[in-house]
Image 1 (cartoon, rainbow, N blue to C red):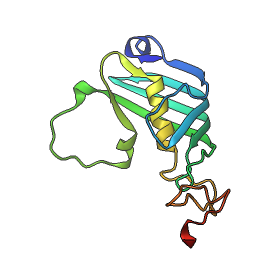
Image 2 (image 1 turned 90 degrees about the vertical axis):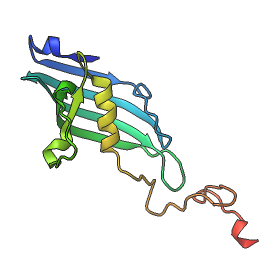
Image 3 (image 1 turned 45 degrees about the vertical axis):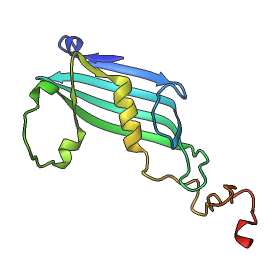
Length: 157
């Protein structure tokens, strides 16, 4: 769904959307799937900027960093974002970035795709490294057995 500048010029936009499991695609090899997700978005125009208040509730299933089994992680993410038109970018060699600038994005054309915003924010909400539990024993480096469920004789040879 496109959050279009033309529509926002007429009125603010409120969207409530549900994404089924797997509907939001990511090219992350360690992420089994995203969803189901409930998304609420409020968007308005402020000068040339699109301002979005986004609330995401749902589940993501990244793989455990040790044993590679999917781990269901609940998501409850609330963020305010600002999108500037790409035309506002200036050619500057070095710029200091402040904390507030990390929630700024850019758009080209008619507006911003809601699905792209949701995908990005889900990925940012996930931990860098997920583990199924603190005692996860991982995989055997020789035979690949999941040491949480079985033992192997590889280290005894």
